[in-house]
Amino acid sequence: CIRDSAPGEANKGTLLPLDDNSITGQVFATQAPQRISDVSQYSNYVAFIPGMRSELCVPLMAHNEILGVINAESYHPSYFSATDEQFLMTVSGQIATALQRTRHYTQEHRRGAQIENLRRATSTLAFSLDLQEVLSNTLTQLDSLIAFDSACIFLKEEHGLVAVAGKGFENLDEIIGHYFSADPELYGEIERTGQPLMLPDTRNDPRFHGWANTSSVRG
Image (cartoon, rainbow, N blue to C red; front, side, top):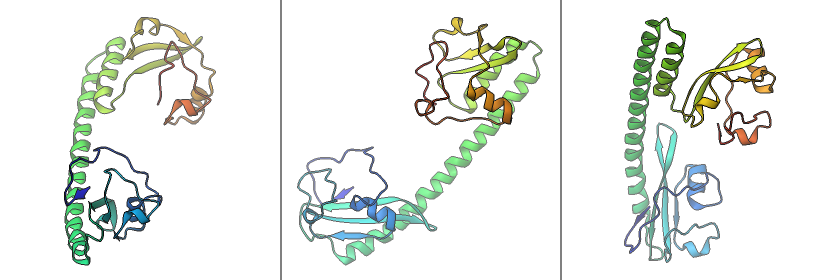
């Protein structure tokens, strides 16, 4: 948020919904700038700093991709001109291009790090013939590839699923070596399809049931 003068600061990290219920949301949705002479006449204006009267909001566009918006506000009505709008559109294009380039670099850097971690993980596992060491190393290396709060490896045996390795649990001694039912729907689906299963929020999936005091698991 850009202002001509302001005694206060806008809240960083504040999330705005990507819908047309706000001026910034409309700009993001339509990818077209909006110049508002008097925000008090707009019921969908969201005030972060009291007393603002006019607003200029433009999209951050790079190669037909919208990355966000730049929102400028003033305490004075009819403060922004068509020249200001044209200037901010030019600046926003340059900023968006830089942002897109930075994102691509970050993604490539992250992908390279993941590939290197995967290489290290597979090479480490290949040099051990001890099952427990392999299982423990698997979770350690997995943590460097996919950040998690807790993870557990189960092996299927005659009496069900036995927990053979875990990481991130406070009650690990209550988990390792214990058997758990192989009947739940989630395991049945994985066994039937042979495909991975991801739950964005376990609270919204009635198939998930907490086990061994893991009711705090969310995903």
